Length: 250
Image 1 (tube, one colour):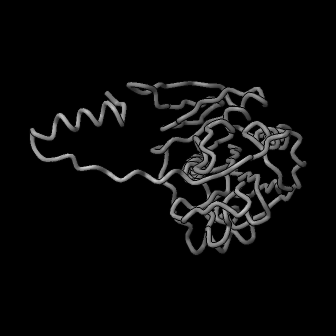
Image 2: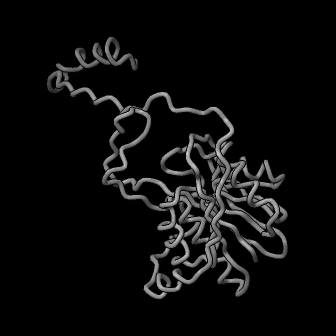
Image 3: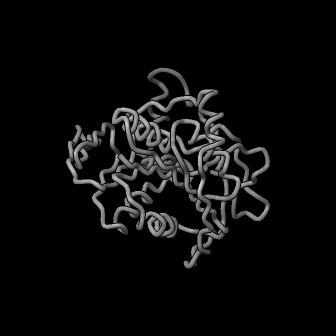
């Protein structure tokens, strides 16, 4: 079973994010980066599938800056067998631009399935995995909470409004991981040591061809202070008035 897992380097969700001086990005000072959590779930599931099969390989693909080497090595320590680092030369790209870089580098390779996280925690577009599937002409199942790959067929359980859908597709196919699909493991000391010897193929990605540009980035507005309008039944008329005239929710 040959499995590809696409991962993204993102700012740690626990980091304090500040807007950079130019107003078009974040200030990198003091910001730690990690593998996007949903991508970790996808990676763990791929490793579990390989381990259950007793054969095959998991290849991590990361489109990111030179600094993403740290996250790639972490993925290798978690159980991936090899990695492809598509080095980003810089420039703004939307989900389509990222998907094109990934698809162009995956197209000629042999694989049974490609796994993505359902979304990255910085862009939150939930689009790249689905676009890659479209560019490669492959079936895709998103928001997967259970996955079995066997005999050229993938059976995926996915979240749907009010229940769960069970989808069967022929392989190769693309799947995006939802929380609950797997619980990512912590790299062991042995895994960390072995990761240093695992192969990483480095490829310089092409410069962006589109015209996407961030005009302005700003933090959310400060939340207005709450109001205390009184206590008990006597406060109800004043509360209703505020909800109708100021909050405009009734």
